[in-house]
Image (cartoon, rainbow, N blue to C red; front, top):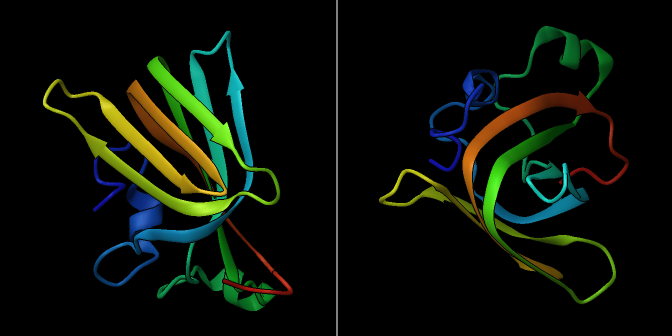
Length: 131
């Protein structure tokens, strides 16, 4: 599972019965490189809504799960964009050195290696065009 190595992954994992969905053809609202290039953050919609959403999300009518992931202490990064909206597949693995290998492919292509990865935030909202 792509999120098993990330810090603070318990809430995200608890939203899905079984395995957290693969990140295929996701809509990325924002990608950000900060802290002098040491930190990469990606904000995206999960490919499907939660199987086990919090009762508050149900009462508010939420239909989309929004996630913020951050990767810190980047040792390598490559970014290429073909313009337009950011949409694509996100793959997250750990290599034999224990570093995160992140590959985003689609309308934006990103390959990075980082020492640390964390689920910064998981929220719900109402989307007019849910995934």
